[in-house]
Amino acid sequence: MKITIIFPAREIEVGRAMIPVMPLAPTLLAALTPQEHDVTLVDMVYGDRVDYEGPCDLVAITIRTPLAVKAYEIADRFRAQGTPVVLGGPHVFAFPAEAKGHASAVAIGEAEELWSRILEDGQSGMLQDFYVSGPYKLESLTGSVYHVPQRPDLSKVPMMRRDLLPRKRYLMDSIFTTRGCPNFCRFCPVTPLFGPQIRHRPIDQVVAEVETLRKYYFNVDDSVFGHPQLVKPPEENRYYLDLYSELARLRSKRLWSGAGGLSAVNYKDGRRIIELAAESGLCSIAAGLESLTGSGQKQSGAWRKLHFTSPDVFDERILKENIRTLQGLGIEIMGFFVVGWDEDTLETYQRTLDFCDETKIIPMILTLAPMPGSPVYEEYLEQGRILTGLPWDRYGGEAVVFRHPAMDPESMQTENGRVMQEGFTWGRIFARTWHTFWHRPSPGVAMNSFFTQMGMQKTFKYLLGK
Ligand code: SF4
Image 1: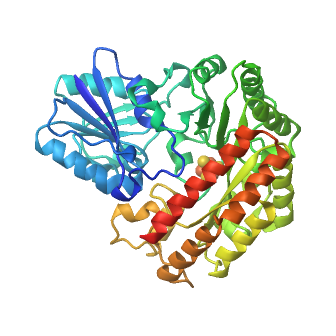
Image 2: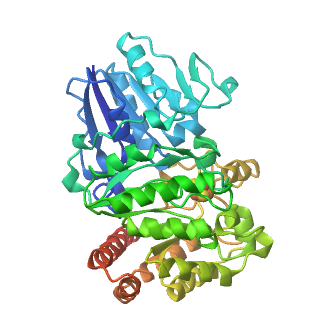
């Protein structure tokens, strides 16, 4: 069969990725495709056009919520001309029936146990309505269902097909080493999607794959330090200690980034994991700090990953100490904050930027966007606080999609835009780059910091000029 795998993008995003990272989902799906099939990847973020005229026997599209409108438009057009379409990704996990209205089949959950069966059924013209991997409420599905109850064993994941995309267009390759998150942050659909147990890819496979990557790569795991605050050491920590020891021993070093929780610095094993990760090339992490107030920590559920035993004991000083420790180990931090928790006010945006200035972390201050599939979305929906008339493409950060008790959507947008533009003035970019270099005198790391921030400056300027 001729298979087209599409990574969709909204017009506003085309050619404007903040940090050009090769997408993982389509390269993974291509890798899972048996060799007898012919696969084409379409990355619309980089301007690839969808070819509706060429030969194609099956289309697969991965959807995140802000991309749902675009993905459905593409799917409808292919189906109108008789080409079957399979939709998957986090959005269809939350809205399978809606997705089925635009698809020949919907894949719910992880692809590894489903994709070869979908291809067999597609080839024989016998696609089921739904393909489900992992625990899921099957009774909510109307139609025929193929179900594999267990989550995939990650030792069977093949090497991604990065050769199918022009790698030079990306600054970074991407890879994953684990799936699953025990943290249950209330605004995040990851735990329901991948489960609370962390599953690991075998170390030798990860190391072999890293050896094929280019100079910079991004690890898309939920936390590259694991979750030492929630797991029982030493068994879980052993994986990260061994993995980074192996990667640190590689002759050809690469720089890499990923997401990581600050709590790791509070554990002996955690600090060793960070040191080894830095030795293996880790230069920056995206850390979900979420809020600077106890009430925001409570509403977001983020306090666990920040090493607090309860949101009531949240203390900004401890957060700062943990930030300093991590920076002292040579890791730059991009701090992700969400503003829009019930007790937040318009001043919260500026206060959060002040905190980032003081701690020299790269600010990523976002207005809350309750994502379908997350507990906050369900709760706000029940309370009538979700602005239900909005199309899904408004969930990309350019609009406020819920009612706040004290702030109006326009003021939130304006203030958010202002602090994000201010957060990336040249003075601030240089100050943070110098701070990073001072802690880790590596020209490569400093360049990575500078160009990452420049990309963010450019993207925010463009988005906010809209
Ligand atoms: S935000 Fe991060 S730590 Fe929290 S549940 Fe999602 S993936 Fe896990």
